[in-house]
Length: 456
Image (cartoon, rainbow, N blue to C red; front, side, top):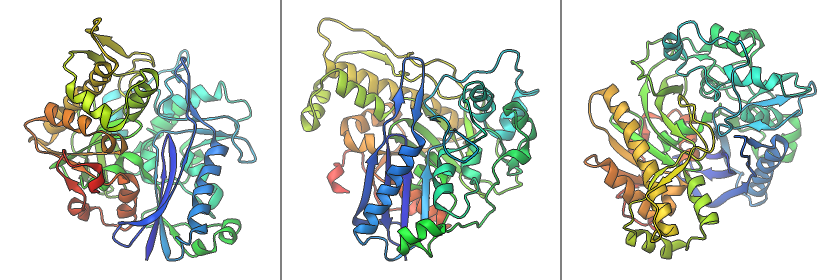
């Protein structure tokens, strides 16, 4: 049995085929970049129809290459927090708001939760622009012709499958889910201006979907395959990094960055106490993920490479090793992720001189993100009462040994490892779909931070 793993990211869509142990099949990878539209006003949007077309192209490519013949299960890692307005006929009536969009704000006169602390405990979130409790009312004022709202994954899979209920994992990223009851939270829905019975149906434990007739004809190799509920990308990355209990934290740097831990908390059980500054979402019906996220990550590196005309590859790594300047940076170019409220454009540089180079600026920015992660890791550790081992992962860290070393320095004296597999989201989603979360702590690929990417 093979597994088709789909990764619905912010900057790209990927499809890859893995074996029954979630190990990628050589050469069975298709990728399409997707244009993320950002602006000085804090916008961060995607074109839903174009995004869906990229996903279909990836599956077409894998099918044409003969890679889908033995696929029995389809797993999906998808970005949290997205929301898409739909017209009455189910087509997009506006762009997809991604996690990067900082424009939504409470409407004049709107009141937040009656008890913010209890709201945070129940939903793992805050009344914040990142979540549907603020996003839906704000969108209604602007999305002409919107009959309803959905997430990006639900829109894409709803086009391909006979039905596509919202997974517990992605529902938790809306900020409207009661994490203990695993049902829509009445107060959160009221803040969003919807009734619980108007929300998307939630996928029950053990749910699987099937391709609809149109796409079963297009991809006959997948006609009998089971489609597992999508998993939030952060939760999938933790599992793919082998960080599935409170002894290990995952630090993932892809387009954005995050630090997270997973705990086993079945439906109906009281979750552990949640620190004020951390969010909590669901991995599935049996686990929660707690952590902090940042709007800057690989996008910071990409901005610097483009605007500062940096050297590339080995030449850049050698220049970073030589950099001795003490540039101090606030890397929040895209503003704050929750619970922070700093707007886009909050990045800062300090300590510049006539001797400062472009590489020095990059080093300061990357080190600034390392320090943000270290501070929030301390909050995670306070919740479990002991230091944690850290596993670094994600495409941006795969590309830069220097950045891995910078994390090693700032996280000392903790043990810090590196997950060499660049497809941790897809691998994690496959393991969750297989019901093998607990086994992920033995996943292959974790090694020293100084090992080269070519060792993968």
